[in-house]
Length: 290
Ligand code: SF4
Image: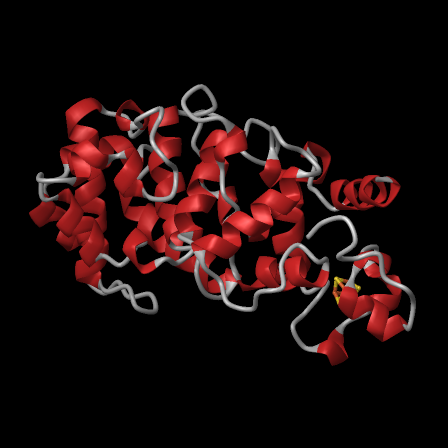
């Protein structure tokens, strides 16, 4: 228990505070933070989280490209812009596997949802499982053409494939957690205790080093396993340390390449299986958290 308390304190020290807001500049969560109106914040969060794959600088550039033509109120612009005109806004857009057609399909799907109520949150089904957009927006995604539009964009995960749905989980973390750096505007709709960690390669790797999982491949099952391990620190808010874990890798504090790591000055070393090997010290990882 004392070990868990110490690891919790260290993870907490790695979590950003309002006073260190510049830490967010190289994270896609910076985008929804620019929009004070909630309909815009929801839409921008869905767009930014959906593009959270690849290198951070490339993600930031791609999201800027998508948002620029939508002006100061993306939710309003999407509602008043016909699909045929949306195509004209992004004539040369391309980002990794995302084509111009996929982007237009994705934005058209969001547009259709907004046209029915003006807010994404108006369609969240409170008691639904959180694993996928299909669950939360089921009525809107089925039978209206939106599902085809959104799926064809490749920007929403297909829950049938068993993947961790990382970008969807990231979107939900931003919307549901009401502690910095997240926005908590759906906190009354979904309990933070139901969230599942947005499992990317960084989070999976660091979680393995800390003994939260033994698995090497990302899946929804592994995301749940890591979330359960983190819930031991904070059952009501298991994603409290998601940002800290992800940014150990994103910020290069713990790069994949062992030769580039500085385990000797890493605050996690005594709890880290890799850090123990690097420093030849007894690790506390895996004792309390598996
Ligand atoms: S101790 Fe080394 S391997 Fe472990 S998290 Fe820190 S930098 Fe990474």
